Length: 521
Image 1 (spheres, helix red, strand yellow):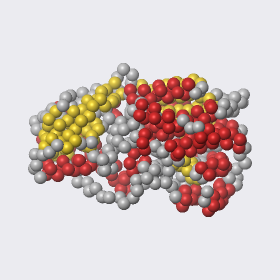
Image 2: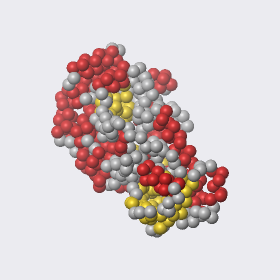
Image 3: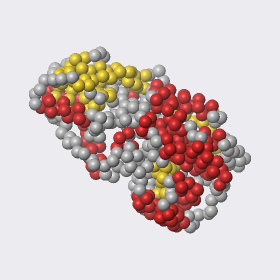
Image 4: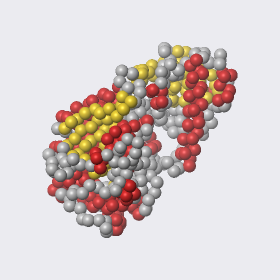
């Protein structure tokens, strides 16, 4: 290990723990967790079944297939009360049954394409010309009526694709980790939320989507075949796909086939249309809505606590199991789900007897707004209509989350909770040789631990190396099993298992942030 990193990290840790009691760490158990997690890991087997075998895990049959498999596997390992728990009404499930798009004139070219989630069908294989729109003024929509029948709609875009000159994959440097450890507090997210270029892109995309939604209704009424869309980050054949999930609760009669294609193909079609070169497309999209069960579900299971005084308290670990549908959702977030499942497998294999109950949660609906975790907190941990904790909420010691790709864990964000950070710094000491060194004061956001943190509970996310998460795999057609790093996932599961064990065994619960403590007195 780099001596400079060790010494500086140790100094930072010592400063943060100066007011904390010394943690009672079980060195023998930590070593057993390391041996099982690093040398006899099943994490890639779990990831294989969640991705290649189960496929995309969008709300609906894709998610339910993976959820039932996960429930069965947790039961097989000996966890108790493995179950699918409904968190409330979601709406209709949705899946892609077929998608084909090609340009047939002025020459043949197959186009990488995927319908946006909860969009409709073309009904059949159709030959269609393009209806090209050069303005996005929604007041002009009525002028398009009678012109859209049997057309594929293309709205002019003027992106300029620029090379980045940066590698797709990256890891945190020593300097970056040290800077994170020294920062008092900083807004978190996933590294892009404060970037003005990114914010501008998101605003532009939302405005474009708003126009597209209105356009689709008119187009469907007039007999159009489909509408093409793209995003600025759908470059180099990497297709970024999400969806209009509000349609899950609608009647879906006005759903047009909304097909997302890569920027390069989109801009090529725009140039051809501007040059008045005749273009013909061949398109066949079949999607299916599912309404037999419109509820949302989480997967839950426990390792029961054994201490008569503490077994009613709970340490939770979790990750969202759902994914988008362009690929099999490997780094987002089969990786996190596999890590958490592997962590409880490690603990069960070692026959641990935790003082507190350990509960794993695999959430649904995260991609559409943290629905699974948010509703779990609402249903179980806070009183209705208020932020006051229920008895069950008061018994939660901590929640740990993984949802930032396949990269190894480099530490943990303490969510501006200095007291918890001082504890975590001690827990990281025997794991530093694995690269987990840093406690960052900043709050990270964007995923399920926020559901706990926002009501004053001790919810935390881990610092992970980005690898290709933001550049190549996040919500894209590239997010497949082959982009998972086995050694990183083994390390991450080992770190998580150690943290969960320590939280389940220590005398007091993990402290919450001071404001929450004062509010709940």
